[in-house]
Image 1 (cartoon, rainbow, N blue to C red):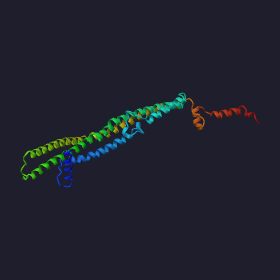
Image 2 (cartoon, helix red, strand yellow):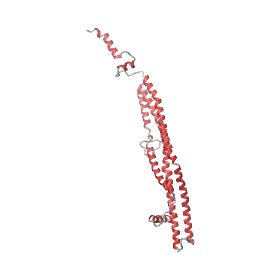
Image 3 (spheres, one colour):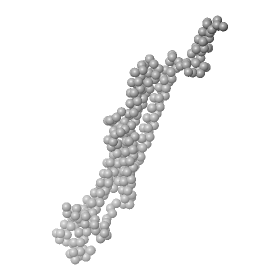
Length: 292
């Protein structure tokens, strides 16, 4: 309680200019301190928006999303299930049934690729960004606040020591003596030692943060690489299934003849004369030619 009171009094004196404020960080580290907050804000925002893009978690609170325990099916999975069920209803013996089954299986495979992509994105991008914004930077900022308290303790101890010197009537070049003076000097030295230890650790953590910026930047390179791999595999899957779809279409026995242009009708039916025309002409030859 006494230490807290001394801190508040020292802070008040520094605020109104009655006491000097000791700055223990270099200008470079003060710039790093400002950058910490900016990186924290950007990382938190990127983490939130990326998590919102996870299709496996649509409709779920952003802070609770995780593709490792999806609470809802992917839209592609739902579509695949719908198509496969439709194929069962129509039957595999129909062309439409075959198409539904093949497309349903394809959509399911695409969904699996999407799940793998989202798992990779969460593990290699989203989670590291969360750790950066919620753990690494806050730990450094917490240590910075602790250092500020230790600096106040040191300044307060120094102030009390010098005030004791003035009250004893000694000049500023002489050190006060006695039990009280020794206690104040010891308190001042201990406060300075604690401050220096904390400052050194904080400085090391700040410089480490600056050195790891290339690692933080690599998260977004990983995101682009994962997206490229996902789209490449999806394209390969679609390209592999297209020939099967076309083969089913071309090999289907029941070709559409009616409602088509005459040339297409003749080509599909492999006839020289359209069947309706042939039927009409045959009927005329058999019956109509005998009528007056």
